[in-house]
Image 1 (cartoon, rainbow, N blue to C red):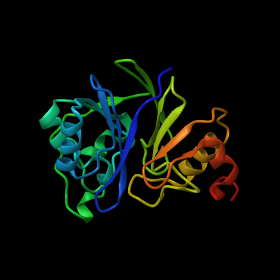
Image 2 (cartoon, rainbow, N blue to C red):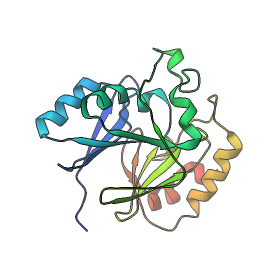
Image 3 (tube, one colour):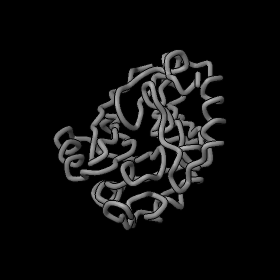
Image 4 (cartoon, rainbow, N blue to C red):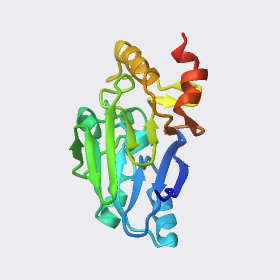
Length: 206
């Protein structure tokens, strides 16, 4: 299996990681949270056409540039069905506390699996940070975009309007029981691996 070319771009005031899976025919963006013009300049300079946008969850710092990208590339946007409402509710997506977003794009809901182009993708719902927060797993490549569910040596907050302490506890148990050593591309900070986090992340051993 050919290795994916993945470019990470921390964007916006929260330095949320946006990832570009570079494929000339069907490139994919994960979590374009801000700085749409910067993303478009990069993509155009590379000669890349974005076909799909995948969202790990619905907070503003992960969704803020989708309208600009859809207007430019006419790409499709997907989010787990449990976070769909957040896209259009500035209280839930937290943009009301910064600069309210009024997203125009019609986003598509995903329940668990998605097949786009050559990719088989699992939206593994891991609630706690939000109701629909996910690992977006590229099944044939052993990698996951973890959004704000899991960071290197940390996890996402669980004190927001659609967060849950109890769901977070169950999610941590579920992640700790996983047996595939996924490469983890988190929503903030450095990359890691699942086994490294199971061993070293203090939230699994609290």
